[in-house]
Length: 191
Image (cartoon, rainbow, N blue to C red; front, side, top):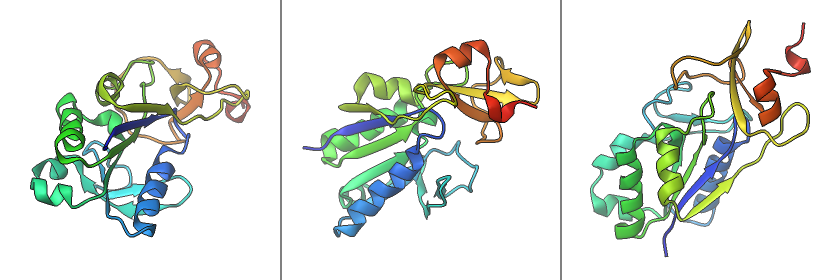
């Protein structure tokens, strides 16, 4: 029975690496898996998924998946979606239709919350309807579990602004809740 999976974690928890490894695992046993991502993620190019450890693969966009004929979607053994936090409620509902009516598992990877600890729309919908929800853990500089995605600049932690500002280690760091509240980026950021 197909399921809708949501694997979430803070920045730098290896979500993208996990997505690429999941794709590899399907392909290695002779099954077809399709990689896709949302249109909002343009950091590495429109149709590329790249992890910090150097793994990368071509993918399609979520809107392109939504335009595919059902028979083509059913030809895959798994659909894997990266950066799913940027998906709309309608896109998440479409992914659930793939699971429910086409019997194809959909495995989603993304952030749960933004730099203000507010849920992203795609993540909020997945938390409401996914069959399986699992955290991919990472650690704060202090060694505690990191759950917050802190946006920063030269002045420190940024507390206001647009929900979506694309960036990586140059503008985001994963922190535990305590250090997020205190605004402490850690020893690597001290002068």
